[in-house]
Each structure stands twice: as structure tokens, then as C-alpha cells.
Image 1 (cartoon, rainbow, N blue to C red):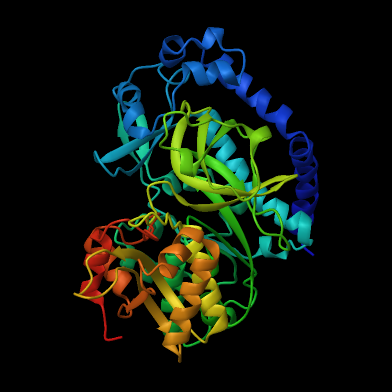
Image 2 (cartoon, one colour):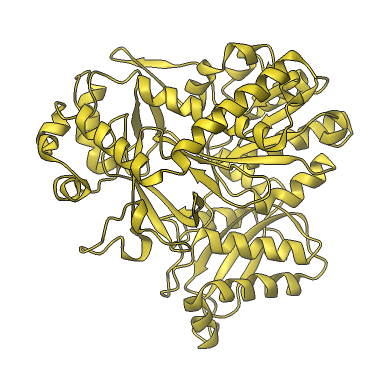
Length: 500
């Protein structure tokens, strides 16, 4: 065992002890975070306009600070972008994470000195937690790759801006710099396909032990490795031990990945965003991610099925229940206040508080009142894959409201198969019955002959990547929308359909 791996184990033990202190004092920890946030920002423009000086508890906060999404907070952000200080948080942010906006172009998410520090610590602690739990630390001696956006940053009124993953590249600790791939030059390549080809060339003969990225884009990297090396990834990288991912649920991709790798490897799920780092998988034997309660983020939760009601309740940790779909609302040390992140989560444990991401509040299918969410379609896909010999590359789901004459409406699943099921009817039946079992509204619509059984539209190999490239969203942090309540994505993908 090397000195570096021994040191990693010692450090991991120290971090685990610190983590345990707030994990088992969750309510007190969150209250302390809340008080610190409000106190620190009381003299900002936002704090003055929202009576922070008089806010004593969560009830006061709810009365004074409404829930807002980015568009509703945009007026304050624009002042920060223009160079004003003390707007949302004391001073100025040190970065803007630039992301794609859905209604008004680019979004600029402020990142402060304290918030980036805690984002970096959270990603580090996820790995250290794995080391402490498993006792495995040899991978720190090998090479590690993080598929991410370009680290080259622009500047706006003295504040650097870029993709979050590119900003994070500037914070790789010195003791990992020699282990880190790809090279700076390769990481700066903007064209995603060219970049992945260059990464393959740089890494194919290296001792890769840790690989991280969004599953759909790591899949492209693995496929190119298979083609160039004429071997499974696990044979090319004999010491490949750990896959770290975030952004999408890995489970629908797992069978495909294990086929590309040729064996099983451990994995760690992360829940990062430009707005903060919220949770990480803390166990290799239990499901869910540990909600980070001591990272400068105060959490509120609104039941998803009540979110658009005027009398919606804003809950704190003490009020949440297991298995309920909640919209997660955050207030952060980067100056986001009662901010609707857009993600929905479910608690799978309250001691400790562990969550899973269930979807997006704007991404669902309820064309007929069924309110199907991402978690449900992903669970259905997982069951269908496990019960058949199918392997999938990617999929999305949309309603078909105007079917052929004399035909009932249905849900249409656009699936790119790596390997089609030998019995497609069985595959479809499992998808449909699983969705019915999870969603009583969908069951009632099928049972009442309002909807017919779902249909599958196979997409040609590489079709999803071609679509993403056509809309300028190939690679990086971009993800395929899992489901929608309209046909915009579905109609675009229909051009890549193949004979069923």
C-alpha cells in the first residue's frame, strides 16, 4: 500500500467523524445554517427589501421571502451581472456558472468564495466516504478522468464565467494533479466528438482507476475505447474500480455499461448543480444519497402535487415524509433565496436524511391527468431490462394525444436499443404493467379504456446523439429530457426512428 493511499484512509476517517456530527444532529444543523445565511445577508439589497433584520425563524422567512425560480429572481441577478455589489450576498460573486435558460437565453448563477469551497469539499467528501466505507484506497495511485466542460473561462464585469464543470476544473487538489486526465489542452477542446476522440488517445494506455461524468457521455467514451482498443473497458483498464456520476439516474444504463466494461465496478452517485452540491451516495449497500445539511444550503420542500396551488405549504426537514414527491427549494451562501431549483426528490430515509432525485417539476406527463414522473418511467425501464435480454442506450417518453382514427391515445416511448429484446411484446407489457403498479392514475386510465397500452418507437443507433448535436447540446452537462407533456422532443426524434 502506498503512502498516498494510507494518507487517504486516515483523511477519510477524519472526514467521516466530522460528517457524523451533523448527520445525527440534522434539525439543529439546518437551523444553524438558516440563521447564518439570514444574518450574513441582512445588509444586502435583497436582505433589506425582504426584512431580513426582523426574520427570526422559518415562519418569518416564509412571510417575507416568496418562492422564486430564476426568471423571477432575474432582476437581482442582472444587477450582480452589471457589477453591483451587496445585492444577493455580501460583496460580489467570484464566478457565474453559465447555463442554458429555457425561456430567456443564458442563465447566470452566482458562485461565491464560500459556496465554491463547499462544492469542492462535497465532491471530495463523496470519494473519502467511499474510502472509509469500503477500505479501498489503492485507486488514488492510478489515473482519474472527469469528463467535463472546457475550463477556459470568459469574464463579465470582472467576474469569471463558464460551465460549472469547467470552473470546478480549477479546484482539483494539488495531490491529484499528476493523476488527473485529460490534459488541460484536451479539456479545452470545444467540439465534443473531437474532444472525446482526443481523450481516448490520451487515456487508452494509462492506468485508469476512476472515471467520472454524466452516464450518456461516458458511454460515448467507452464505445470509442471499445472500437479503438478492440477490448472491453475493464480489460483496457485492469484497475478501473470506481465510476462517479451525476445528472441522471444510472440504473437504466447499468446493463449497457457492464457490457461495455465487461465486469461490475463500484459507483458513486452525486447530486450537484450550478446552484449547489446537495447530496452524494454514502453507501455501496444502501440506496439513496445523503442530503448535505452543513454545506451552506437551507432546504425547504413543497409537495409536488400541491406546488402550483396558492395555499402550498413550505416544509422543513422536520415535516417531510418518506416516499412523497417534493419540489426542493434552496437558500444558499451564493445568494439564492427560496429558489426553486426545478428538481423533485423523494426521501427514502429520515435517519439519516437520504434522498433520490425523482424528476423535474416541469418534466412530467399528465396529458390525461396521470402525472407520470421520471422516477416511474425509469423504474419501469429498469424492470423491463432486467426481465428481458434488452440493453438500452437512451430513451424518452411523450404522450400521443391524436392517434390514428378509431385508436385510443397512448404513451409513446422512444428507445435507442443497444440490443433489442427478443420478445418485444413482453418488454412492452413489463413497461406498462410496472407503470400501472407505480401510478394509480395511469392504471385507472388504462383500466377505464381512456388510454391504450404504451407503444415503443425504436430509434436508430446513435440517433439520440445526432439529435443532441443538431440542437447544439452534445456532451458536457447536457442531458436528454426523460419525459415531456408535449410532442416537441418526440416529433424531432421521430426523424431518427427505425422500423419496429
